[in-house]
Structure formats: structure tokens, C-alpha cells
Length: 430
Image (cartoon, rainbow, N blue to C red; front, side, top):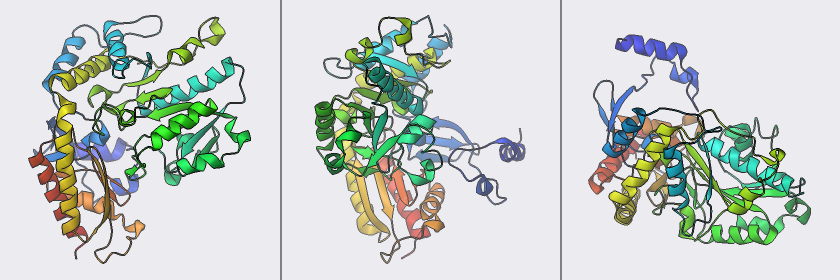
């Protein structure tokens, strides 16, 4: 297709996620068509290069077009692209299951259920937890506890856990009953009658993504683990965003030596290449499902444990080892901290920032310190302006997100923040 034909077909047929399509299809809007990627950069159909400042919606780990993952996918493609995981198995899934469970010392979560994406990883954890309590003779344990401003996916079960009104209110009363609390202090205020009906508690450890990169207090996760253990309630950790090095360790829960009952992984699992998710759980939970057929977990997906995705995921873990990725993160986290402090010092339009590893949220304000008008969508305007300076990222309302691939260099961080500073000064002049 010629460029004008591509844009016409785009406007006529596509429906994008989290997008007001009336604005997207407006005559003045020019969609950016991404054609290829190289390392931390994306290149559009006209040859323009952009630093991928949100690692392609928080998925890309080692940069685009990494030769190790490319080679692994190509090698697997020459064997088979997909085979059912219902009644069959294959080597990439077997190897990946063993590798994932071995990432936590002592293999406390030795069982893996594969699915397709973050939402499905959460759905698996929810349904396994609910069925577990039914099998143990506690059908009254059918409610969930989650946190305000949480985001755990968009399917009906995962969406019921969400605490962001604009995303979840339309559907929150249609499915799973979920109680929401603001923080760890509220645990003491939960009535025993409510507590005894809880199947599980779910949290994004260390930092909430869609809440605007909102960080949790140090020690909170360990306290929550103790509370769940004391009351016999499952702890589900949603590490869809925080997994695979984002926080400075392989998993966020490792900062406080917390072992959950369910660990949900997706996004970076394949290095940002292919859809694949995993829900890890304990042997004790797994064993509750053994026996007669009516105890089986009747849940699955057509592309469960897709061999191409498993091959990409194995290569992702191989890169962590061969390139010593985790060992290099401390210096990069420090570089990002310096960049954030410098940006804040030099811009009156930065109200505050939060950092967790290589994840950052930058809150915008008017230059005089007054709050922004949400209807102006200033965050989106800043990101649009940053595009002209070679940086691509997306805001969460008026919080700018910066979450690059772990391969980013100090020079590239500086380039990204120079682009961001220019975009902010153009959008919110002093």
C-alpha cells in the first residue's frame, strides 16, 4: 500500500486500545506507523528514529531485534510454530517451566500454568484459588481483596480487581466480588466476617503501574505476606509489569524475600517478542487438584505454551545470564535517578517524581505550581511534543512514564531526558 492508502485503511478499519477513536481518526491526526526496531530505538515508515521510552508498553527487556531471541524464534519456527498443550507437551515448554521455577531460590513455586497475557495470568490465579477453596470444603471463600488504584488487566475477572474508576467502574459489579483498601493499615479494619470469605489478596508489588507509577512503602509486601499467612488467605503477586529486572532484581518480591502463593508473569517474559504468560504456584495448591476428574482445573487457551513464545522466553532468560543483565542494573538505576533529579531541578513544571529501579513516573504541574486541568490532557500533549525530539512514551493521565529496555545506556538516558525537557518547556512554558 502507498502511504495514503495505509492511513485510509487504518482509519477505516482499526480500533485501538485505550483510545478515543474520534480523536484518533480526526483529520489533523497523523498516526505513527512503526516499521522496525533496533536496540532501544523504534523506526517509523519514513525512517525517523525514536527512543522507545516505555519499552513498547512495558514489554521489551533487552532491546528490539536482539540476535539471541531472533535466532531462538527462527530455530523453533523451522521445527514447529504451534502444537496443542492439551494432551501433548513439547521441549520448549518443559525447559521454560523448569527455568522459571528455578528463578526463586529453593523452587517454592514449582508448578507453572501457561497462558497468553497478563490478564489471563491473573484469571488463572483467581480461578485456581477459588477452586482450591471449593475442593478443600470452603466454598464461602469466594471474594477477593485488592488495592485502590490497582490495575490487573481488562478481562472480566481481572477487571473486577481493578481500582481505577475510568477503566473498571462500568464492569466492576458484574463479576467477582472484590473489596478494595487504600493501604496496608486498612487490613486491621477488615471485619472477621469479611476476612473469612476472602480467597486471596492481590497486589502489584513495590509499584502500581496504571495508578501513575505509585510506589508502596518499604516493608509493606512482607507485612502483607505475614497477614495472609496468619489468616490462611492466598497472596497473588501481579508481576506482569515488575518482573524480569524492572525493579533491579528479577522479581520485585525478591527485594523483601517474599514468596507468594501465586506469581503472575507476562509482558517481559518473552523479552517483549511474543504473547505468553505464566502463573506459578505451590505444590500444595497443585496437589489439591489431583484425584478424580471433577477435581481437574478445566481452564485453558488454544495457544497455551506456544512453542515460539517459549523459545523466545528461554532466550530472554539466556540473555540475562550471558550478558549479566541484573549485575549492570545498579549503575543504570543511579543514572536514571540523576536524570530525574536534574529534570526536576530545571523545570518548574515537574511537581514530583517516583522511581523504582528502571521505572519512573514524572508528575506534571503548571509552571506556577497550580494543578493541571485534567481535561487539557497535558500529559498526552507533552508526549506528542516529545515525539518531535526523538522520544516515544505514553502518559498515565498527567504523569509521564519512563520505562526503557534494560539495555539502555547513560548517554541514551540523557538523550531521552533532554527530549522530555524540551517537550515540557514547549507544552508548559514558564
